[in-house]
Image (cartoon, rainbow, N blue to C red; front, side, top):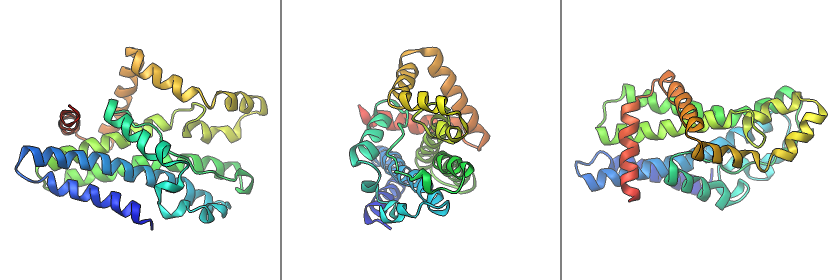
Length: 243
């Protein structure tokens, strides 16, 4: 397991400890560490989900490439994989998909395996969101900690909803791509580079699209037991730190 991943996890835990302190500055700092450290950690777990599923599905090369170590430096590029997604969270609260693991699709056993590899990443985010919300529900904790964790859980749900969309370049499209015709796959390949960018422009620039997306995200968040009020408190504390 990568020491860098353990450092990210440690920063998240340290943030959790600070969030329990009865001091506004310490609590806000703790929430920031929970969100940023936790999100960076989840990016690694998201890509690990892809990699371990591919490994079990026949692509043994992912082990040699270091994808199973949870090292963020192994996932495409450190800037694209970690820094840029973190900046998007800071700027607008929309978790940009992180890096990618390069899969040898010819080594995978079947189209079902290819679909499973694509779905493993967003399902990892959904599972993390569920586990975090369950912890908030079952474990008595100060509001600073519960709000920070709830906002982190909400980001996991947003990442799931975003990545599961059947848009070229996102995991949802990767899940259906093996079942498409050759012509449809060619068109999807041409759209792969600009389709996610177009989606983000719509989310930020077209109010109706943004509202519909976040309404769906809140619906899923409620379904996994999330507390929208606590997530809002965590988001406000995080945004207060930005300014």
